[in-house]
Length: 158
Image (cartoon, rainbow, N blue to C red):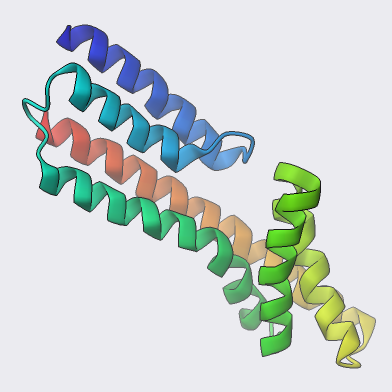
C-alpha cells in the first residue's frame, strides 16, 4: 500500500509542478493533496500534524505570491500605488473572466489602466505593465521553488 501511495503522490507532485508553470492546474494544491493522499493511505505513519501545518503555511505563502508578485513588479518599474492596486484587481478580474490567461493579461491591463487614469503617458504606463509581467514571472519562479521545497521536505520526512 505504501508503494501505491508513493506513486500516486509523485503523480500529483508532478502535476502540481506543471500547474505552477501552467496556470490551468492548481499547482500547490495538487502538491499538498499528494501529501495528504499519501498520509491517508499510509495512516499517517511518517507524517504528523506539524508536517501538514508547516506545508499548509507554505501553501498559503504560495497563494499570496499570485496576488503580490504583480504588484511588486509594478512598483519596481516605478508604478504608482494605484498601478499596484490595479494589477491586483486586474489579476482577480482576469482570473474571473479570462481563466488562466487572465493571470497575464489582467494584471498588465490593470496596471496600465490605473497609470493611464492617473494621466501618465502611454509609454510609461506600458513600462509599468511590463514590470507587472516581470513580477508575475518572478512570482512563478518563487512558487516553483516553494513547491520543490515542499516535495523535498516530504521525501525527507518519509
